[in-house]
Structures are given as C-alpha cells and as structure tokens.
Image (tube, rainbow, N blue to C red; front, side):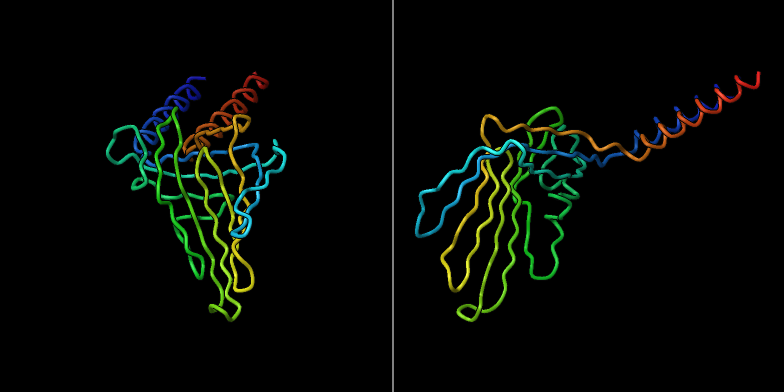
Length: 194
C-alpha cells in the first residue's frame, strides 16, 4: 500500500510539473441553430427559411497567451479549424485567413475566418466560391461564375442559437487519468489477494 501511495504522489507531482509548462491551450466551440436565407445580385432582398435548431457550426482552435494578459488575440492563435479544415494554412487554389480573433476564457469568442477557391479564366469557365464565418453573427457561402450573377446562402445567428465552448484536454490530463485508472485497478487486484 505504501508503494501505491508513493507512486500516486509521484504521478501527481509529474502532472503538476507538466501542466505548469503547457502554454498552448485548445478549445472546441460550436453554434447550434441558424436562420437560413438566400439572395443574389439580381434579388438583393434576402428570402428567409425556417429556423433550423439542428444546424451546427463547429470548430477548434489552439492559442498561446504570449503576453500573459488573459486574452488570446489573433497573433497568439497557432491553429484554427472549422469542421477540421484549417483556416490558417491553405494550399493549392484555396486562399484562407483568420482576420479577426479574440477570446477570454470564460468570456466571449470573436473571430472572422474566410476562404475562397477560384477556378478558370474570366469568360472562359471562371468560377469562385467564397465562405465567411463571423462568430456570433452568421456564416455564408457565395457563388460567382461567368454564366451567373453572384448568389449567397447565409445562415444567421438568432436569440435561439446556442453557443458552447470547452477546453480540449491536454495530453498530460489523459496520461494522469489513465495512470489513475491503472492504479485503481492495481489496488483492487491487490485487495482481492489480501
């Protein structure tokens, strides 16, 4: 029993040491429930659908509070994804970016992320699809091409939209949990033998 106590104390100290050096923090966020609308250059007045309580927009970001002011800014974000797709590291014909970002743990999340994919040459089969994601307001997709004027599909946030954000467990948290479960199993096995 004395050995188990020493092992548990050692693991607890190791967990504290690891967490004190963990500076990058991760967060999962999600908006649930949107009001869809459609519009185009020829019909700029949007047409609204019914509020969809099941429509979800979700993502994840990692950031490091380098200036230690308790607020994560755009310059401190190391990774930002929506549905697992990066908005900071684009390749090929896709252009993307995170032009605004601010998050205070326990407070509001603010961001504007965008991307665009363009194909072809103007008047020879050119097309472009652009997307924008604005925290707490809306996200949209716009379509343009040689043969059609721009159309926009928009999803707006309403008072019914739910927002959730939670910290991503750090690797040492999973390590400590696994070690704790293993210790409980060993202690139970040992008590059966006695």
